[in-house]
Figure (cartoon, helix red, strand yellow):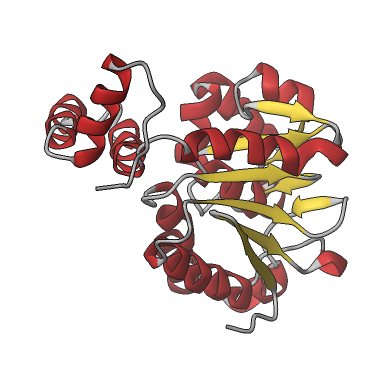
Length: 258
């Protein structure tokens, strides 16, 4: 499929999605979100894709926020619909996706850009990255999951401070507070994301999906029960039998996702 706002490339079992609006600092508009939805849906359905890396074009920004040029025309109902559609079609789709997704944060990740990174399962930042949720400077609050995901990553107190002040974190500060998993030089960013993703792809695809689902249920009323059920389901897979046999016979497992 031909895209106007993103680049999609697949190498080996990794699909690379690049937000390709460099002159706009890769800001998210409706068309970009629509294309992300399509690309992600197709990747999840493609058995040749094991995991994804999302990044931004250029060296200045991952995603510098949402494209706010259309905001003045929206009323309360329009704003509600905007947030609902984005959450459902992209941000929740990523967070609850069956395949691991790593955000390679190569510069500014602000507003919707940080929310996009936080929806991903793992975040790697270049050393020039800066991250924040400045929506209050516009008289708004984060609307793509920022108020929910940021406290889970950095704690309620730090999330309150970041959102209420609109202050940004440097890459090192983001690492210190648990907002990102690793910080690298920009030239090494994609390689680090590939290193981590390839390690994940050496595990059982069935177990990876089960683990993502169970971790996402952490803190919910039935989180422990979901873990128990997913743990039990693994015993019905060929991958579990292969993994145990490989361990007992001191060899590397060959998983098939079945």
